[in-house]
Image (cartoon, rainbow, N blue to C red; front, side, top):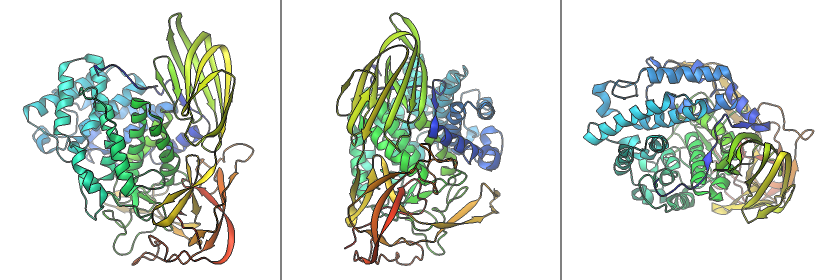
Length: 625
């Protein structure tokens, strides 16, 4: 950190607010499972973190990591009070020496301290949102105690903590910027030394096995991508873009069409019927947000939007009361396997939609996805502002200029990623000139703009905005639908950041029951999605036609813009039946690859839905011969 500041800084939830379809997504989440876990799920409602008897490790911190920014982005006073209740309890139970986790002193040596790193990050999130003046002191005592215990050898990193050592650097960086004390950098060095060097794991990423290991665990790897970005400067190291090296290798052997790594729950190869854990989806998103902020490299923002607009909504029910533990690219049915599991290391129910299918970590953790994406919309470097993710939102902030402080707002009106028109309404309470950058994705064609002079390069429009009162900037560009090739001579259809799938109609079967003291009761119950329509198709030709499906120019109003019934956009294609076949030993899983590409029957026109809308789907398909 002594090497000088670089990169973008984040705005707070007080300065940045969602609009349009994004605000509706957040409202839907608030009314769904992530917004109500403290009311319906024992591991949060009755957690040891707040004096109860249930889980006292990662689940409450995971939940707060999404619930806190959600509450503040929506300016929901009742939700803010509920978040404060948890934070107050956590602070109230902090030990005099600074230890913060719900663990007895004699148990500390055996306690995997991953939650120390996690709760420290969450308290930093809370401070960013609330500006609670207690938080810097709480973090200081927490991490000073952690440093002393690690330095004297009373505890050490192992298991999850060893593989997630870098997660603590969110709070460590904040503390060092606040206090500038040497022990903070020493703590960073201890964590780095005791933490896992992922170079040692790389060979194992090339040949996925039916074996559970921490070095191939997909959530560890999704988190790990940001490790160098958040740690190198405070460690006094040069930045080498290790994330790109790791990303390329993992994607080569385990990549999916929506930018994920297969992992159910360890790396699972290139098969379209292997799954990806939902925790990995939101953690990979968060890594990309921090990578872009640190490096200003647009590749990370472009990769982020592919995951955010496809993989995240795909794993959530329309009302966000149910989620999958793992999603598959080709997913023709989601019912419990009656015999052995299809997945390498997950159970037979990991792909159903429910309260906590397979395991409860994703139940607690998935809520961070949409709120943190909303907080990524606008970033800044001093008085320079960038629209990093062009989702509907409004920024209200201050610029500290030589002539004094100015209050500005930038309101972005758009339906991106479902169309490509962007209207920026910029207001200031006094005459100002400031640089404003708009990230232009690599797939954009024929970019046009009105309202201000700008410099244009391949990846950005840079405006020197001169405003007193109100100014309007409009940007449009075109996007062509195209094919992406996949392994085994399969292909997927793409339009901008959206990947498209053949939707499969389904019947939802609801299950209400109790197990191990956890009740599943509508709306927080389990569902099997049982496919009822044909899925065994190949593409008949290469024609792709994009069809906007907005009603009256507005998104559909069914709770989520990623509706499984009313998608906002579709691609028209021609398909033909092929003898695809089922995976050996399974009645409701398509084979990894078709038995033959030989088409039969009539060619027919169908609509492909956005991947995030098609809860059952065929995404990777061949060209029929």
